[in-house]
Image: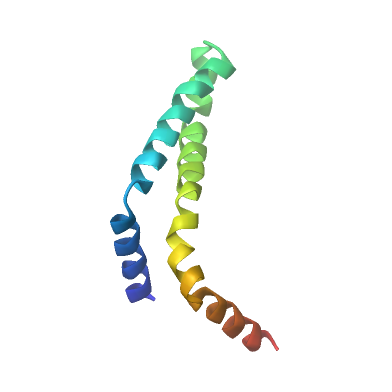
Length: 89
């Protein structure tokens, strides 16, 4: 499992651009939420940690498609799905 994880990280780094898009999206969410909520500092301080977590999770979702794209193209993702279905029977 660790070898697959490391391989996928190397592939995502080689593809390039994915991390920058995630960081820009994260910053855009963090900057725009206070405009929608308003200037109430008490409210912003209470919901600030939740906004950070939600923005980070949404930014991570942007890179998932590219992470599994090579596996989808070469058919290994289909083999993993079929192997999992066989064990359920």
